[in-house]
Structures are given as structure tokens and as C-alpha cells.
Amino acid sequence: MSESPIVVIGAGVGGLSAAIQLAVAGRRVLLLEQNSYVGGKMAERRQDGFRWDTGPSVITMRDVLEDLFRLAGRTMEDYLRLVPIDPLTRYFFSDGRVLDVCRDAGATARQLDRLDPREGQAYLRFLAHAERLFRITSPAFIYGDPPSLSSLRRFSPLDLLRIDGLRTMDQAVRRRVHTPQLRQLLDRFATYVGADPFRAPGTLSVIAHVELNQGVWYPEGGIYRLAEALAQLAREWGVRLDLGRRVRKIQTQAGRAVGVETEDGETIAAEAVVANVDAALVYGDLLAAQPDVRPLADRVRRQPRSLSGFILLLGVEGQTAEFVHHNLLFSGDYRAEFRSLNEGDRPTSDPSLYVSISARSNPHDVPPGCENWFVMANVPGESGYWAVPERAEAYAEQVLGTLARRGFDVRPRLRCRRWITPLDIENATGAWRGALYGASSDGRLAAFRRAHNRSPVIERLYLAGGTVHPGGGVPMAMLSGKAAARMLLQDERRS
Image 1 (cartoon, rainbow, N blue to C red):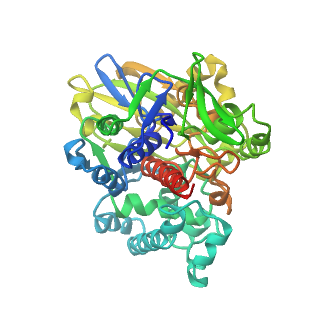
Image 2: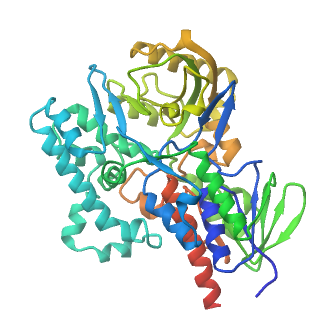
């Protein structure tokens, strides 16, 4: 076996997951990260006594985390304590109605019955549908190797009908519920992977299962504690983490990855390379000098991109009694909102707004008597629009105005504010054009077009992260790292 290490590019949770699993398998691993901190999109900001998580805001599928620690011979609770969140989310509708979605599905159903006597049972039936979707699809689309059209042969004809692949998510939801409020609430789960519920396949209703049926958690001390826990675990298993080292090129020889070149000009030989980097960046930039890669790079970059986010981090004086940890303020016309998001590179004028206040679960995130608001609006994944600095400030004012019109004028209570645009996300994480999840999940065949964890054009090159199989979100990114490590080890044994 070569004396060269396996080089992992990028210390997001996908890269950390791959590095840990390779180290546990006895491989030497060098993890290179361009930033001075680990976590990738899972990051945090601090200012004037306030702390914000700036990436993921909830943890789902906790069994994925527990399995990784168990594989490494550890217990997750020795590194990280997850606290259940209840209510899961508080929803504010444009007609003034407010609904808490709770861990107790029956409590949620009773609230829905006040909207329509049929709606509580419709909600419970939808949860059963989402659970069935998860049972049917997860072996092929989540836990297994990347799916191909031949994967559909594993499904019975009845199961193929049940997964709602021929309907849009909105059409699938409308078949099962009655009120516009519940339709909007369930459609919202498409945005968890940056998709449009009016274009994404109905199969994506499976996302509702992992939150509404399985619940959500928040780590004590903040989401970023998870990134720190994974980095600690990696170091304990001998992974060398080299922070502040940007890779500008993956080196190849005879169609095989043999090393990387860093921005400071150092060449590092590698037995194999795992790129926890946006697939469009891997093929379009890190392998740009390889002529055989160009057709794949063009194909990856031609794919429509997922949505991104415009984020406001607000330090707020006083308490907002109406808000819980997770809150969603819906626009009045969801279809028009997504139509606007898909028409070009500009943000919509009437966005739905997600507001997370982690101080509800972690009071140490704020000075006494204050709140830390993380406010996000969906925006197109086109970072070029934000290259004009004045646009970010103007949209920040627009978002604050939208909050005010919906009854939450926080402007007189602000101690500090800052914003994060898709261009900032691209610069910090390599997310091509600022898209949070890489290629769009809209369309019936989107899952089959997602980039593979094993490069089809360069041997000994593997991909992890939210832009490759099985997709975006913390548990999915961790599973992508598991898939990349598994394929690498399989190929090693075969050769």
C-alpha cells in the first residue's frame, strides 16, 4: 500500500464523516480546509455578545450521527448532547392564523381541526404517507449507492405509484389535505433541499417524515458544536487537519487522482482524493486542466441550480413573546413567490421568512434580556447579482420592512446586524454560484442527475457533501461521506 495519505478536500460534515470512516478503517488521512475553522456551511458568527449559527439550524435523523460515533467506538453523548425541540416550528400565515407543529402529532392535528374538521385526520394520514415514502425510497435514494434508472426495478409497480414521482410535490400535497394553510406548510419541505414545491417531484414529501415523525434536535451550545465534535473525533483517530490550506488543483496521472496542489504552491501526493466540494467546482475548477473532464464539467454546470438564501443576523434587545426557537412567516401567495424566484437572479419582493432564535434553547448565545435572530429568505442561487454591495443593504432593509408589515418591527430594538449573501456563501464554502445544494432537485429525474460519489472520469477520486448523492442537509452530507469512504475502500480491495 502507498505511503501517501488519502487527501480529503474540505472539512464540512461530509468531509469529516469520510475522514473519520477512512481513519477507522486504518488509512492515513490528511484533511485540507481553506478556512481557519471546520464545518463548511455549518459555521457560527459572534458579535457584541451575540452568537448565531449561520448554516443548518436543526438536526434530524440523529441515528446517522449516533452510527458514526458508534463506528468509531465512541458514544455520541460523550461529545455532544442533543436536546429535543418542541414545538418543532411555529407557523405564521398571511391571514393572521398561527399554528404550532408539535412532536405530538395529535396535538398538531387538534389545532388543524380548528381550520377544518377534516384536516387533523388528513395531517395524520399525510404523516403515514411520508413514513411509507421513507420506507420505500430510503434504501435506494438515501442509504444505498447513487440511484440509476435501473434502481426503479427494485420497486414493485404499486410502490412506484406510491412514491408520487409523476406529480409535483404541491400536487401530491393537494390530493391529501384541504386547507391552503396546511398545503403551504407541507409544501415548505421542498425548500429543505432548495427546491420549488411546484416543480419538485412529490417524492420529496419524504423530507416531512424526518422532521414531523422523527423530530428535531438542537445541540447544547449550538449547531456548530457538532462540527467541533466531529473534528475532535477525527483527530482522536489520527486524521491530520490542516486548516487555512486552499486546494487549487487536483493532480492526475493517466486518468487517476494522484495528489493535490495547494494555493501556496505545495504539491501533496495522495493515494486517493475525496473532494468535499461542490461538484461543479470539482469538475469545472479543480480539474479544469483535464480535457477528458470538460464534457462532464459542462454537463454539471448546465444543470439548473438549487435555491440559495439571504441571511440577516440580528442582535435584538428585549423579548418577542410570539416567537419560539423555529418560526416561519409565510408570504400571502406561495406560488407567486416561487414563480418570482425562478424568473431570474433577483430576490422576490414578498418572501416567506424563516426566523430562528437559538437563545430559546441556548441562553448563553445572547447578552441578558436579548435575542439572536437568524432571518433567512429564499433567493435564487445566482451569486453574481450580489456583486453590487448596495443590493445587499437594500434587500436587508426590505426584509426588515417585511417583518414589520407582518407585525414584527424589530428595527427600534436592534443592537447589531449583519448579512450573508449567496456571494458570501460561495466565497466561504465554494458553493458554485451561491446555490446551497448544488444542482436543483426540481423535475422528475433530478435524483438521477445528482453527481455520483465516485468520479466517472477520474479514478481514485470521490465526492462528498450536499451537492452529491444523497443530497443536502446535515445527515445527508454525512451519509455522502460514508458513501465516498465505502466506495474508496471497495475499489481498494478490488485492486
